Length: 576
Image 1 (cartoon, rainbow, N blue to C red):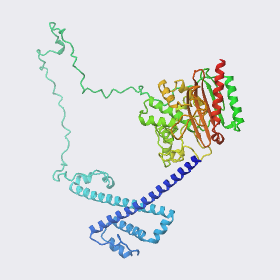
Image 2: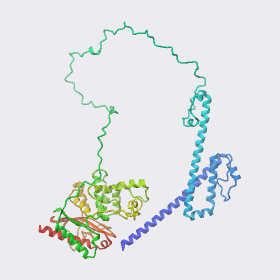
Image 3: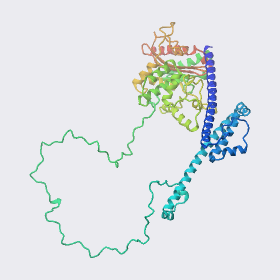
Image 4: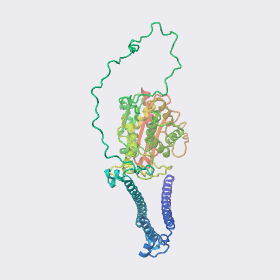
């Protein structure tokens, strides 16, 4: 009841905050419109004073419609663009000052939207006309300059092949440089065609090279000069810093930097043997669940004996909603990014990892998934193009495991509620990726086999590196009760990883090491755990998913399953 009350209170607070934000936005929009209108009136009033004419139309406070005579008198002597501005401003002032029109506009949301569209359309029209008349004035001035230049230089006027339109594209000549009007090319001057080279001119045969001048081929080094054996290259001689590689030398196209792939390192499914004794244990669990009045249709179970490397399960390849068990996979993904240098490790990531695994904190897990996928949650929907880019990055966490043999696994959606954004339920792109409006809405999906496999790879030091595996196993470690009948150890408030899950029925006097990641919502209960006895003869992975409201409400079913499996596994190893 307390949890339901908290959820209702959170939803109510969220709705109140959303309505306050919308109201504030509406007030801000109205205030901006008022400021824009005041600025427009000031600009037109200044221009009116500069022209030295009084135009009552521009800042009128009356509700009467101005006559055509008044408009013509006010606009007399003004440029065309400012005549248009004055008419527009007069119309706007009449709309603003007319209380009847305002009441109709603000009473209807549809009219209010039309008013905003018309207002901004008028503003845009003002800027377009202003640009048009300023550009027209520049072109007229340029035509005058071109005409003056043609009068001063008639040759260029006669020989120019440029049209008036092409002259507008030519750069304006400098006013300081002008052609001299006195210098004109002579029409009588023509290039001479009579000048030819004389055939009688020949090189003189009497000119001979001097006998004292010898070619470089006759110069030989003296045989008496020998290099000194004491001369050695100096060690201080270094290549000049000015020497640069030739621009013609290009790196080979075949040499490319190696791209770091974001893929889980264990790329093949582990090989486990089938074991009839494990099958009997699983069948016994199924019978017990039925005896408790629960349906096995919503039950999935995987049991792996790490000592004998054997496996058994029930519906272990059925994809189910994992709740917070998905955080086990996010932990491995971000540790892999840190190991490959794609993310820098810092205290923020370490703190969020601790809270995500120990307390199952949704705020921390939200930031972890943002770091993994390089995306961020937003409160507004994205367009198709931006959403496709956003979705491609978010789905990278799926491909990280799918390329390593985790078939059809889906881990790209956050767990809610998230209070630091705040998002009680998915909105924006987080809602778009769920495909709620389609026939097949998308949710996170994991099998018990995939959860048990990943836990076994962490325990056996295969996940990423042995160092990272031990670090992750330390985060998953849980403290058990000292002995049967003793109190459970206290955990931070919020989420207790033992109460109602596989670790509640186990005790530290029989179990030497226990690690787990649990998940729970109003319609499911899930847990995956590694159990090791004190003598280390019993080592197994147990993953149990119960996806129905009956499993969610039954807080004793998982502890009873765990106790039965532990006793069976202990007896199994004693017989060996």
